[in-house]
Amino acid sequence: MRSCRVMSDKLDGLRNLLERLSNAHGVSGHEGSSRDILTHELTPYVDEIRIDAFGNLIATKSGKGPSVMLSAHMDEVGLSAKYIDENGFIYFIGIGGWFDQTLLNQRVRLHGTKGDIPGVIGSKPPHILEEEEKKKPIPMKDMFIDIGAASAEDVEGLGVQIGTPITIDRQFTPLSSNFVTGKALDDRAGCAMMIEAMKRTKATTTVFAVGSTQEEVGLKGAKTASFGLNPNVAIATETNIAGDHPGIEKKMAHLELGKGPSVTVVDGAGRGLITPDSVLRWIEGTAQKARIAYQRDVSSGGTTDATAINLTRAGVPAGVVSVVTRYLHTPVEVLNLEDLDDAAELVARMLETVADYF
Image (cartoon, rainbow, N blue to C red; front, side, top):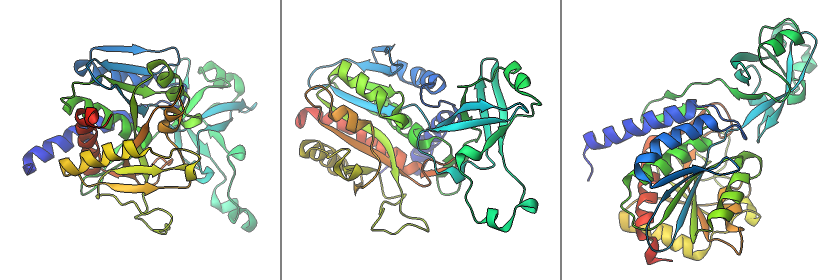
């Protein structure tokens, strides 16, 4: 049994790593900030790191036996400047899946050519809203960003133009009981899981630790990376939907924080990944041997890098190990660090047992 002191030190290290990853800004197609952290963290534990033509980070630990690809996407859902009006207000589109109302009145960062510019997504104050207006959600197309500029020329003078990437300006914060909250835990938690697994494993097989790009807009980086690597088997390290808070029925989402990582059996109602039996035996057999609690999951919506990897070339057996996370695709995602620790431990042990299954 792990001592309380050892456990506390491990969670402190995880918390610090996840904080740096969460606070990094990297909307799809602009993942450089998070990629720099992965490069720094993985370098001591691999033999080679390179960036491929699509921007994926590929860290290779050379060995013998079946090759394993780990994939954690580095991008986050964000925005892109679409139009700047004559008064300096900036309209935008969503990059990735947003529920529009989570954006209203958020602070944002516009990543311009002259550096980051702070802004806010503005709206009418309640004092002047008509009763009918109060009943209607505001669609994203009617929202705008205020950076304090007086004209379109002012905006452009600050280095902001059509196409400038935009992210939410929200800082990672510890909650009680080893819970934490922050933006982009989907999938910076998966990045942290992959990093920690590479640090902890004693695997002698070849491992490709991939920080993938543009997952939120079509699983793009995983497609190109897996085609180039052609691994024997792959695991996406991810987040998954929690069903342990008000507003969700258990029959829709039953996963709970504090009960270990989730293991995907089916996602996207089968249109995404149907995890091969061989991969499930590997994941669950390793978890049982290592005495790591886990939760099986079947979902009707959402897919991961594993879907794209599974369909690469002649097909790659693939699965998903996830940290159960509340409020996904919002600026206030919440997870339990103990679940993240267990997920990293499971993946580390899986890298050591892969030759027993493939």
